[in-house]
Image 1 (spheres, rainbow, N blue to C red):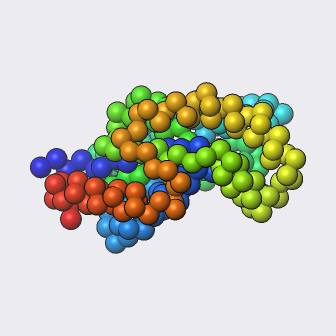
Image 2 (image 1 turned 180 degrees about the vertical axis):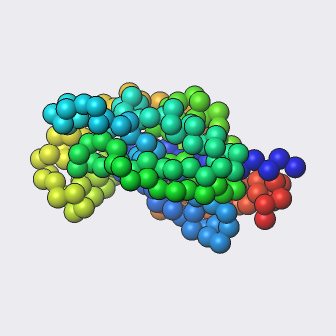
Image 3 (image 1 turned 90 degrees about the horizontal axis):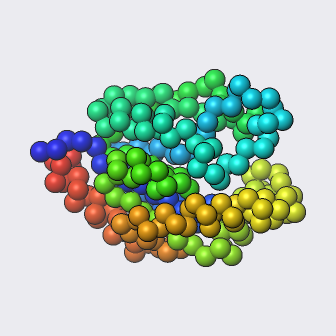
Length: 211
């Protein structure tokens, strides 16, 4: 039997509900050997750049991510070795000195806007999901989050969405939908799709004799 951990990729635009889908799957397997790995933790270290330059970072562009480190860490987890997950500090726009110890598990859920963009990451996945939500819902969710949780103004959220988030979504995120094994409309509200995913994962785990 192949005892290699199962890797599930969950992609989708900002505000699509991919985090809700990821958490729903994770909660369904609570008590089992499962972990979440968020691509957001793997933004590139920018400590060598002046602070003014860091402020220009486009966090919705593929080049913002340190996929080399992410891939290295997934390979380690696939070999049942622990990793030290980096922590990104948005207040200084670079990587924090803090790291998070992550022990290997039998199921790895890799979540992020661009996890399906890099072929090397896709090749490591057993199941690829894309959470597909209409643009109007995505911007409303993003606006509510950024105003409530990040103290931003409506004008700044709209400006960023129009000038950065939307064009990056159309150029880099939306095209990765074609790589998905399963497309989940409406994110965490699609309980049927989530239940089907949980059943599929259970089947894979049983085949690998994990359950």
